[in-house]
Image (cartoon, rainbow over all chains, first blue to last red; front, side, top):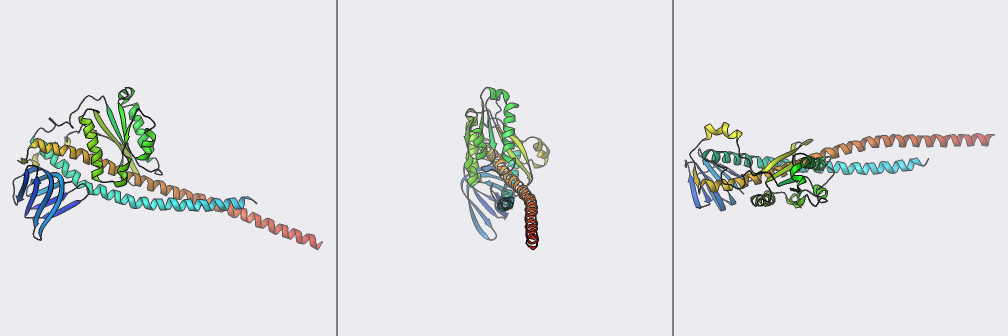
Length: 77
Length: 296
């Protein structure tokens, strides 16, 4: 599935991933391929993503995530 | 001829002024490019944010309980005037001042005569102007330009949102130079608060993007998260636009100044050479006259 992590100042990440773990307001949750459409608020924490190259981490200061049609958009701060 | 030396001094001074304006133009061009990049980088974030906002508003009635969308009768108005810290950029700052004054006279004349309009200045030039009017002047935020990033702008936005929620103001309007291209800026006013829900585009897009979302933790909390973000982004965009416009305006002004200095130099050089030739002619005449006298 496709992931985009965007901040107001730059695009942090764009590409294919197999798993995303985000710090939701009510606790961390993971999104895998073909996850149901979801919109969630995020709190301060780490976004962990798994790509074919390995695992990456991004620190975020809150934000919003939207998953739709196998595409994830993270608006981070 | 005494004019010769004076003209020479003027030529030297015009040359050095021209060098300064040329350098300033180049600096502005570089800064303009950077400012434009910042706008371009913000664009995907802003467009995705409106997209999500639209998706959310399709699934529920958004504007219900949020304090930032509440439309109140407009008694107290805050005008956020965005200009620059530095001058030498043509009519950039005075355009903003003129627009704000016009708003005070026309749009918000009623509130202004009751003393219910305040101005928050961003930029030293405009603060200098409005700080003289104690009744009007609220505060300044000139330091944003020292370190222009989302975080600093967010602080201003949070301040505005707090004041709006406390009902210190019923309406917050921003006035800024919208960036068109390096030579053209439009003075624009936008209502920042209360936030207007995205309407016209939402209806067009509605049919295809409708999806059954899971809202986590709840739709209200997501809306509460999204609305301040939208406001912050709007303000950030306005300030970035204004920043790019400033450099664009300065670049054009300095380009014009360099050209004018060139024209001036041409004229000065002409009159210098004329004066120089006149002196030489006179000297030759004197010598010839002297030689004639000795002969006789």
